[in-house]
Image (cartoon, rainbow, N blue to C red):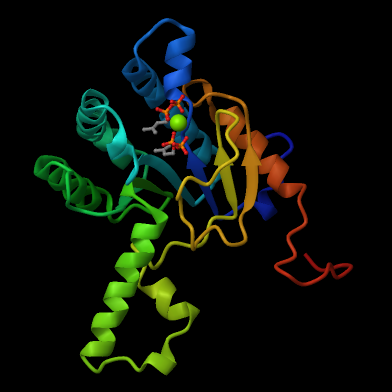
Length: 246
Ligand code: IPE
Ligand code: IPE
Ligand code: MG
Protein backbone atom coordinates (compact mmCIF):
# COMPACT_ATOMS: atom_id res chain seq x y z
CA UNK A 1 0.00 0.00 0.00
CA UNK A 2 1.31 3.40 -0.96
CA UNK A 3 -0.24 6.50 0.57
CA UNK A 4 -2.74 8.22 -1.70
CA UNK A 5 -2.76 5.49 -4.35
CA UNK A 6 -5.91 3.45 -4.93
CA UNK A 7 -4.65 -0.11 -5.55
CA UNK A 8 -7.84 -1.02 -7.41
CA UNK A 9 -7.25 1.67 -10.06
CA UNK A 10 -3.57 1.27 -10.77
CA UNK A 11 -2.37 1.96 -14.28
CA UNK A 12 -1.36 -1.18 -16.15
CA UNK A 13 1.50 0.47 -17.99
CA UNK A 14 3.59 3.57 -17.28
CA UNK A 15 5.97 4.80 -19.99
CA UNK A 16 8.80 7.15 -19.05
CA UNK A 17 11.03 9.49 -21.03
CA UNK A 18 14.18 9.60 -18.90
CA UNK A 19 15.30 13.11 -19.86
CA UNK A 20 17.57 15.76 -18.36
CA UNK A 21 20.76 13.82 -17.66
CA UNK A 22 22.93 16.33 -19.52
CA UNK A 23 21.47 19.33 -17.73
CA UNK A 24 21.77 17.60 -14.35
CA UNK A 25 25.48 17.09 -14.99
CA UNK A 26 25.98 20.60 -16.35
CA UNK A 27 24.45 22.11 -13.20
CA UNK A 28 27.11 20.30 -11.18
CA UNK A 29 30.03 21.11 -13.44
CA UNK A 30 30.25 17.46 -14.51
CA UNK A 31 30.42 15.83 -17.93
CA UNK A 32 27.15 15.01 -19.69
CA UNK A 33 28.05 11.34 -19.47
CA UNK A 34 28.22 11.59 -15.65
CA UNK A 35 24.55 12.53 -15.86
CA UNK A 36 23.74 9.34 -17.76
CA UNK A 37 25.64 7.33 -15.15
CA UNK A 38 23.68 9.03 -12.35
CA UNK A 39 20.46 8.00 -14.10
CA UNK A 40 21.08 4.38 -13.16
CA UNK A 41 20.12 4.90 -9.53
CA UNK A 42 17.00 6.78 -10.61
CA UNK A 43 16.00 3.87 -12.84
CA UNK A 44 16.51 1.20 -10.20
CA UNK A 45 14.71 3.14 -7.48
CA UNK A 46 11.81 3.64 -9.91
CA UNK A 47 11.79 -0.09 -10.75
CA UNK A 48 11.64 -0.89 -7.03
CA UNK A 49 8.78 1.58 -6.69
CA UNK A 50 6.93 -0.09 -9.56
CA UNK A 51 7.33 -3.46 -7.80
CA UNK A 52 6.25 -1.96 -4.47
CA UNK A 53 3.05 -0.51 -5.88
CA UNK A 54 2.33 -3.56 -8.09
CA UNK A 55 2.65 -1.91 -11.50
CA UNK A 56 2.81 -4.70 -14.12
CA UNK A 57 4.36 -2.85 -17.09
CA UNK A 58 6.93 -0.07 -17.29
CA UNK A 59 8.72 1.16 -20.41
CA UNK A 60 11.69 3.51 -20.40
CA UNK A 61 13.21 5.48 -23.29
CA UNK A 62 16.93 4.70 -23.15
CA UNK A 63 18.18 5.60 -26.64
CA UNK A 64 16.26 7.03 -29.58
CA UNK A 65 16.86 6.59 -33.31
CA UNK A 66 17.67 10.34 -33.28
CA UNK A 67 20.24 10.08 -30.47
CA UNK A 68 22.79 8.87 -33.07
CA UNK A 69 23.09 12.57 -33.95
CA UNK A 70 24.96 13.23 -30.71
CA UNK A 71 28.76 13.49 -30.56
CA UNK A 72 30.45 10.15 -31.16
CA UNK A 73 31.93 10.11 -27.65
CA UNK A 74 28.52 10.41 -26.03
CA UNK A 75 26.99 7.78 -28.34
CA UNK A 76 29.85 5.40 -27.55
CA UNK A 77 29.43 6.04 -23.84
CA UNK A 78 25.70 5.32 -24.03
CA UNK A 79 26.24 2.04 -25.90
CA UNK A 80 28.85 0.86 -23.38
CA UNK A 81 26.88 2.13 -20.43
CA UNK A 82 23.69 0.33 -21.43
CA UNK A 83 25.69 -2.82 -22.05
CA UNK A 84 27.43 -2.69 -18.69
CA UNK A 85 24.18 -1.88 -16.89
CA UNK A 86 22.63 -5.02 -18.35
CA UNK A 87 25.58 -7.20 -17.43
CA UNK A 88 25.96 -5.79 -13.92
CA UNK A 89 22.29 -5.78 -13.00
CA UNK A 90 20.41 -8.44 -14.91
CA UNK A 91 20.74 -11.06 -12.17
CA UNK A 92 19.35 -8.61 -9.64
CA UNK A 93 16.43 -7.78 -11.95
CA UNK A 94 15.87 -11.49 -12.49
CA UNK A 95 15.82 -12.13 -8.72
CA UNK A 96 13.27 -9.34 -8.31
CA UNK A 97 10.92 -11.06 -10.79
CA UNK A 98 11.39 -8.50 -13.55
CA UNK A 99 10.99 -9.56 -17.17
CA UNK A 100 13.36 -7.39 -19.20
CA UNK A 101 12.54 -6.70 -22.81
CA UNK A 102 13.68 -4.39 -25.58
CA UNK A 103 11.84 -2.55 -28.34
CA UNK A 104 13.64 -0.80 -31.16
CA UNK A 105 15.64 -1.61 -34.26
CA UNK A 106 18.02 -4.49 -33.73
CA UNK A 107 20.80 -3.70 -36.07
CA UNK A 108 22.14 -0.62 -37.77
CA UNK A 109 24.86 0.92 -35.64
CA UNK A 110 24.10 -0.99 -32.43
CA UNK A 111 27.23 -3.05 -31.67
CA UNK A 112 26.70 -6.77 -32.17
CA UNK A 113 27.87 -7.49 -28.62
CA UNK A 114 25.15 -5.24 -27.20
CA UNK A 115 22.53 -7.02 -29.32
CA UNK A 116 23.74 -10.35 -27.95
CA UNK A 117 23.40 -9.12 -24.34
CA UNK A 118 19.89 -7.94 -25.14
CA UNK A 119 18.91 -11.39 -26.43
CA UNK A 120 20.55 -13.10 -23.43
CA UNK A 121 18.87 -10.82 -20.88
CA UNK A 122 15.47 -11.32 -22.47
CA UNK A 123 15.98 -15.09 -22.36
CA UNK A 124 17.22 -15.04 -18.75
CA UNK A 125 14.19 -13.10 -17.50
CA UNK A 126 11.52 -14.38 -19.91
CA UNK A 127 9.56 -16.33 -17.30
CA UNK A 128 9.25 -13.46 -14.80
CA UNK A 129 5.86 -11.84 -14.44
CA UNK A 130 5.95 -9.33 -11.56
CA UNK A 131 6.98 -6.45 -13.78
CA UNK A 132 7.76 -6.23 -17.47
CA UNK A 133 10.46 -3.60 -17.84
CA UNK A 134 10.85 -2.65 -21.49
CA UNK A 135 13.82 -0.63 -22.69
CA UNK A 136 13.16 1.44 -25.79
CA UNK A 137 16.63 1.27 -27.27
CA UNK A 138 17.51 2.42 -30.78
CA UNK A 139 13.78 3.07 -30.75
CA UNK A 140 11.77 5.55 -32.80
CA UNK A 141 7.99 5.61 -33.08
CA UNK A 142 8.15 6.34 -36.81
CA UNK A 143 10.73 3.60 -37.38
CA UNK A 144 8.41 1.20 -35.54
CA UNK A 145 5.52 2.13 -37.84
CA UNK A 146 7.77 1.79 -40.91
CA UNK A 147 8.86 -1.67 -39.74
CA UNK A 148 5.24 -2.68 -39.05
CA UNK A 149 4.21 -1.44 -42.49
CA UNK A 150 6.96 -3.48 -44.15
CA UNK A 151 5.89 -6.61 -42.27
CA UNK A 152 2.28 -6.08 -43.28
CA UNK A 153 3.26 -5.46 -46.92
CA UNK A 154 5.16 -8.75 -46.92
CA UNK A 155 2.10 -10.59 -45.63
CA UNK A 156 0.02 -9.02 -48.40
CA UNK A 157 2.64 -9.87 -51.05
CA UNK A 158 2.73 -13.48 -49.83
CA UNK A 159 -1.05 -13.68 -50.23
CA UNK A 160 -1.58 -14.20 -46.49
CA UNK A 161 -3.44 -10.93 -45.92
CA UNK A 162 -5.96 -8.96 -47.97
CA UNK A 163 -5.51 -5.15 -47.94
CA UNK A 164 -9.21 -4.80 -47.08
CA UNK A 165 -8.61 -6.93 -43.96
CA UNK A 166 -6.03 -4.48 -42.53
CA UNK A 167 -7.38 -2.74 -39.46
CA UNK A 168 -5.98 -1.23 -36.25
CA UNK A 169 -5.42 -4.68 -34.77
CA UNK A 170 -3.29 -5.64 -37.79
CA UNK A 171 -1.01 -2.70 -37.09
CA UNK A 172 -0.91 -3.36 -33.34
CA UNK A 173 0.00 -7.01 -34.02
CA UNK A 174 2.98 -5.95 -36.10
CA UNK A 175 4.57 -3.56 -33.59
CA UNK A 176 7.77 -4.54 -31.76
CA UNK A 177 5.90 -5.83 -28.69
CA UNK A 178 2.43 -6.90 -29.83
CA UNK A 179 1.46 -8.14 -26.36
CA UNK A 180 2.36 -4.85 -24.63
CA UNK A 181 -0.71 -2.94 -23.45
CA UNK A 182 -0.84 0.74 -24.46
CA UNK A 183 0.60 3.01 -21.76
CA UNK A 184 -1.99 4.50 -19.44
CA UNK A 185 0.45 7.19 -18.41
CA UNK A 186 3.40 8.87 -20.07
CA UNK A 187 5.84 10.62 -17.73
CA UNK A 188 8.45 12.97 -19.14
CA UNK A 189 11.05 14.51 -16.87
CA UNK A 190 13.13 17.69 -17.20
CA UNK A 191 10.36 20.14 -18.05
CA UNK A 192 10.19 19.33 -21.77
CA UNK A 193 6.75 19.06 -23.31
CA UNK A 194 7.44 16.77 -26.24
CA UNK A 195 6.89 13.18 -27.29
CA UNK A 196 10.24 13.06 -29.19
CA UNK A 197 9.16 10.16 -31.41
CA UNK A 198 8.31 7.86 -28.47
CA UNK A 199 5.57 5.20 -28.80
CA UNK A 200 3.61 7.20 -31.37
CA UNK A 201 0.94 4.57 -31.98
CA UNK A 202 0.74 3.34 -28.39
CA UNK A 203 0.35 6.77 -26.73
CA UNK A 204 -2.90 7.61 -28.57
CA UNK A 205 -4.95 7.83 -25.35
CA UNK A 206 -2.30 7.98 -22.64
CA UNK A 207 -2.51 10.55 -19.86
CA UNK A 208 0.48 12.87 -20.10
CA UNK A 209 2.37 13.83 -16.95
CA UNK A 210 5.24 16.30 -17.11
CA UNK A 211 7.63 17.09 -14.29
CA UNK A 212 10.55 19.50 -13.96
CA UNK A 213 12.58 16.90 -12.05
CA UNK A 214 15.72 15.96 -13.99
CA UNK A 215 15.98 12.21 -14.55
CA UNK A 216 18.98 11.56 -12.22
CA UNK A 217 16.93 13.09 -9.36
CA UNK A 218 13.82 10.98 -10.12
CA UNK A 219 12.89 8.47 -7.39
CA UNK A 220 10.01 6.10 -6.69
CA UNK A 221 8.10 8.89 -4.93
CA UNK A 222 8.02 10.77 -8.25
CA UNK A 223 6.51 7.68 -9.89
CA UNK A 224 3.92 7.49 -7.10
CA UNK A 225 3.12 11.17 -7.63
CA UNK A 226 2.56 10.54 -11.36
CA UNK A 227 0.23 7.63 -10.52
CA UNK A 228 -1.75 9.85 -8.11
CA UNK A 229 -2.01 12.49 -10.82
CA UNK A 230 -3.26 9.80 -13.25
CA UNK A 231 -5.85 8.60 -10.74
CA UNK A 232 -7.23 12.13 -10.53
CA UNK A 233 -7.84 12.32 -14.28
CA UNK A 234 -11.02 11.44 -16.13
CA UNK A 235 -10.35 9.26 -19.17
CA UNK A 236 -13.12 9.43 -21.73
CA UNK A 237 -11.67 7.85 -24.89
CA UNK A 238 -13.86 10.12 -26.97
CA UNK A 239 -17.05 9.24 -25.12
CA UNK A 240 -18.66 11.19 -22.27
CA UNK A 241 -18.55 10.45 -18.55
CA UNK A 242 -21.31 8.16 -17.36
CA UNK A 243 -22.30 8.68 -13.71
CA UNK A 244 -21.46 5.60 -11.66
CA UNK A 245 -19.27 4.08 -14.36
CA UNK A 246 -15.49 4.06 -14.07
C1 IPE B 1 18.29 11.81 -21.53
O1 IPE B 1 19.06 12.86 -21.06
C2 IPE B 1 19.12 10.60 -21.85
C3 IPE B 1 19.23 10.31 -23.30
C4 IPE B 1 18.65 10.96 -24.26
C5 IPE B 1 20.07 9.17 -23.65
P1 IPE B 1 19.71 13.92 -22.07
O2 IPE B 1 21.08 13.43 -22.41
O3 IPE B 1 18.82 14.16 -23.21
O4 IPE B 1 19.81 15.20 -21.14
P2 IPE B 1 19.50 16.69 -21.57
O5 IPE B 1 18.15 16.72 -22.17
O6 IPE B 1 20.56 17.07 -22.58
O7 IPE B 1 19.60 17.48 -20.32
C1 IPE C 1 14.32 11.55 -25.71
O1 IPE C 1 15.11 12.55 -25.14
C2 IPE C 1 15.10 10.27 -25.85
C3 IPE C 1 15.51 9.61 -24.60
C4 IPE C 1 15.20 10.00 -23.39
C5 IPE C 1 16.30 8.42 -24.75
P1 IPE C 1 15.95 13.57 -26.05
O2 IPE C 1 16.69 14.43 -25.09
O3 IPE C 1 16.73 12.83 -27.06
O4 IPE C 1 14.79 14.38 -26.79
P2 IPE C 1 14.84 15.83 -27.48
O5 IPE C 1 16.00 15.82 -28.40
O6 IPE C 1 15.02 16.83 -26.39
O7 IPE C 1 13.51 15.97 -28.15
MG1 MG D 1 17.28 15.44 -23.52
